Image 1 (cartoon, rainbow, N blue to C red):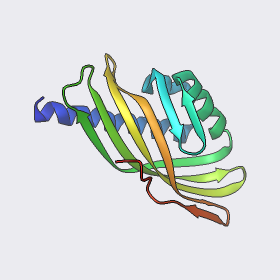
Image 2: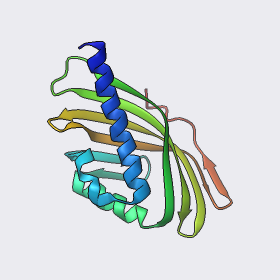
Image 3: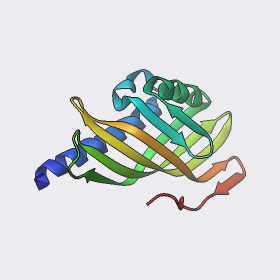
Length: 152
């Protein structure tokens, strides 16, 4: 694959991740179907394991209903295109923060998404998203965790 083609694919994945954050911020879960494959998995380490696009969207709708306002900001990220795969596959890691008011408590979350993607006829889609919490402040309560040792 040429360098230009790989850059184009990585930019497509960057856009996918940015669209996810935009939909979370707008609580527009009805627009999220096109971001996931039908059999996608969402893992929130130590909390939830959800299989299937429709179940993921239901879960996200329910959890976002607890927030009266939320801002999810994606920070640094990396994307690796898996060579020799068809359909094209890729992996990514994204650091993010979320802040807002959850259940009437000022809340700040920092964490990392570890993703798997597959290129469909419509572009790259999430096949797996794993979220690991690294920091959380809810009111006066603060928790922090080290980067997960089982991630590369």
